[in-house]
Image (cartoon, rainbow over all chains, first blue to last red; front, side, top):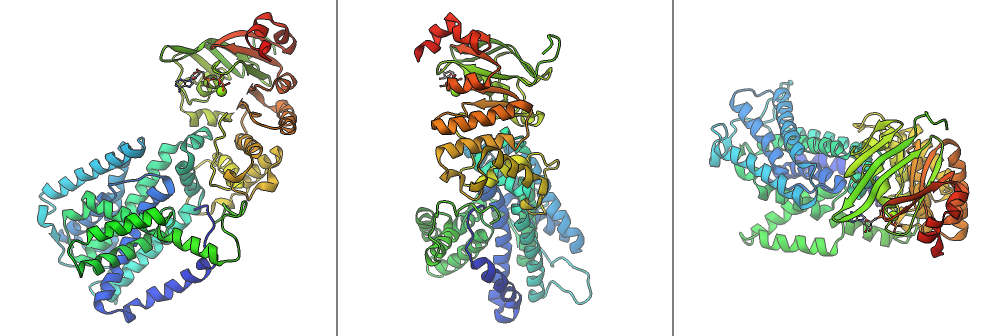
Length: 331
Length: 251
Ligand SMILES: Nc1ncnc2c1ncn2[C@@H]1O[C@H](COP(=O)(O)OP(=O)(O)OP(=O)(O)O)[C@@H](O)[C@H]1O
Ligand SMILES: [Mg+2]
């Protein structure tokens, strides 16, 4: 984003995060290691959606379709005894990207509510295919008998610690890629499109092509998240690509803060944490969750990241909203 | 201009209607390369509509638009911009949340040949930065490069609006009331700037400030109710009875 970054969070929090993440398999119990793996996966999923929502201004309600396609592709290939990760992973990502290219081509020319509705409708189409195709086990979903095989000596993804690192590697690489992308000329153009698409056009940017490109990129990352998800769970069913799944990942993005990469990751953590917490008291966890989301949207402009940044700004000596301090162009 | 040379911009029978209202009624304009042409006329005469059609923001109902002899009517704005036609907006149209520099840097970035540049930071492209910096210096806004565009004064926002067009390095400038709402001093500065730009640009200038128009324009077209009622140099237009009656007489 082109707003002021939290001054020391950048310098301290992120470098501290890496050793903490790397040490996780030795700190966390099996249950929490599984939870941490899930959070990593959903962080990637939510960050990929934020490329669309927060950076480009494309509010997609169909993002779970690409997650689901990545997951089903992995499950089907493993079922067909194509188990090598070097084949399964790229194939899953590629299929998700192709689906995103098709759905994007039909949707990125529209804007606002039409875009929301078209992505929703096309993703539901994918859902019905998963529900009815002979390949996907319909409502029962698919069980995966094993995880993909990396094929390097000493590496076995069936081990939950090793699988955690497999996920950490891909999520970490993806995060670095996305972080570079949003600061690159391409990413700046996306943010320009979100802010003022008419002006971008008048300056010579073919905005639909940019939107299609980022839609495909976001779909590919969602497909990667799906690949990791089904490998974690050994299971995928159509609920993972239903519109409600798209809605949930959108909630994670909004909860954490649109237009940042850290926000959606935090959103994924808080969302799943709250889900676990609340559902240990009541099975109607969606209601309190909905209320919390409404509160965050009403009072925390910019989600949890927004709250955090404003708190930071208040604490530091620099007065917030200094007339010409904002909009440093390399934030 | 020799009569047979190709005009920088030409419209033939350009017509635009909104419902029953004819806003541009068969306009035939010929603007020579290097010419500074002002289009004046009362509010609602159809001046902005003319620019919107040339820049691709509106599709003409009838007629042709030729840029350096090639037809461009109905093209999307991005293609027209890439030909070297830069437009400014009457209603300041910035990236208000971005810094001043980022506003012009984005404009300058539109010249990068490939879209999918995702690895290096946006600030790492020297020629883009230079182009942006130059545009800011030309309009006298370089000292505000770090400010948020939305926090600028009205006058500064008009300068930025112009800088974003200049950062495109266009051959033809379509300027929609660049001096609207400016103080006398600010208007003078923009007039000076346009006189300078005139040396190596073709300009189509819409402006209500008649001092500026008479200072800058080689020729002036007067538009009333979508009709061209006169075209000529400052003297001819100033003394044209139809123009005095329809427009200049107001003041
Ligand atoms: N998109 C539109 N839809 C309907 N009517 C429009 C539209 N745009 C402009 N008009 C009408 O067309 C007429 C000409 O508008 P235009 O903006 O071209 O005038 P103008 O000469 O630029 O005026 P001003 O000096 O006030 O800027 C006006 O009556 C306006 O209300
Ligand atoms: Mg106008």
